[in-house]
Structures are given as structure tokens and as C-alpha cells.
Length: 64
Image (cartoon, rainbow, N blue to C red; front, top):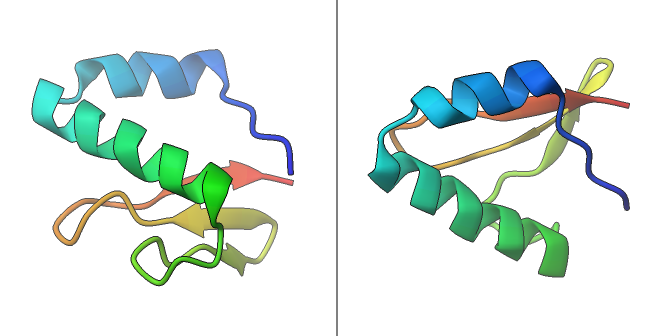
């Protein structure tokens, strides 16, 4: 699976607190290694894929 991020994604990512960025980076690495890992909750939602960043954090979705 290929992963892409838009310019607007990076703008939003760069506004996140450093701690949240590190958590997102950690979970993205886990997503690449094991998309079915239960802590990620990787799933299709209509035309998007959703993965959890953390328990209290919103999910980041990307278009097919």
C-alpha cells in the first residue's frame, strides 16, 4: 500500500503539538508495518481510509 500526504495535511500536521506529532509518526510507522494492528483501527470509511493517532486524538483520513 502506498501512502501520500497533501500539502494541507502537512500544514495541519505542523500545527500539532510536538508530542502529538511524535505519536502520529510512531503510529504511521506501525501502520506501514502492520495495517491490521488493533491499536491503529485502520478502516475504510466511504471514500477514505482512517487510522487512529491516539486514544484522545482524531483520526487522520486519506482519499483512495
